[in-house]
Image (cartoon, rainbow, N blue to C red):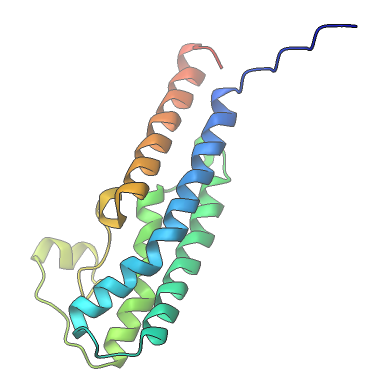
Length: 159
């Protein structure tokens, strides 16, 4: 009987894909609650039916997760954006909901207003932490793994 063949260690590229999956899962879980929290904050708690708020959160999640999966499925050298910039798309559904409900846009910093004119309520997440600790941890871990893969390809590090 032959001894078992040791498992081949995962390459940094394979590890990066696992971290990307973890990031997608964290975002998928965080966005609906993030949207509901912001809607209640801006519109007043109890103003809307909980099912309405959850539907907005689901639309925000679905839009962001589809784009995030698309981006993270590309090789890092082909990625034309970042996951955090993709997450700017989560504001579309809550913004539309607030506009239809007649909630007045907030006063925003002139720089932010010029950079993101469609973000009428200041919702765009600027950091991973804006979506919670799980997303922050997954996003930073993915970013570190991406940086390692990037350097490994250019400096002949072990891949």
